[in-house]
Length: 207
Image 1: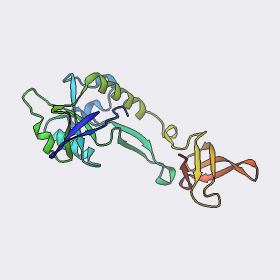
Image 2: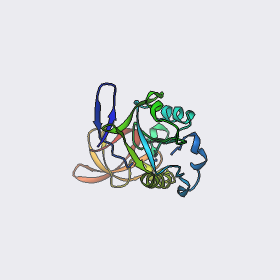
Image 3: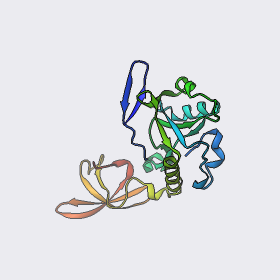
Image 4: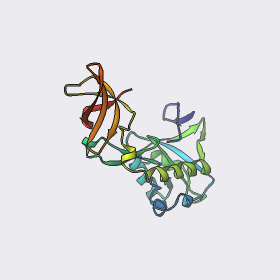
């Protein structure tokens, strides 16, 4: 459990730290490099908790103050009705990692940095992640970012879905195959299995 400090009290928050792109201004050259180029300026990284949807703002602001910054991101593909667009989302929403650039630099200004809510702490001690742990995340990130858009499509063969509109609304089925614009679904209709073609915008994953 990671505890984040606040003005009134220390709040305990869980950080499921393992879901990775941009190393901030200081490390921009390393983003396109191999995973073994992840820099080791320090054996550990501090963890900050950002304001909602402010990870990129916090990253830029910290980099401007000469902190080394790492914001892990996950490559995702929205449904085809959103133009099948590839996007990059924070791997750990609202968490960002940073290091000081020299021994004399204080982490105190981080808390008042635009986009930052708090520095994550264990009691009074700032929480840290080892360089080795972040290197493994970075390697995963680099590998995942090379995945094709098709392999990241939300409707993979065998996925259970539910129709959300049209004549089959409310019915469930299994994805048989999918393309950029269409999804073929195997459904039970009139007592037999039938292959039905849908637009992805008319389907939701069945949970």
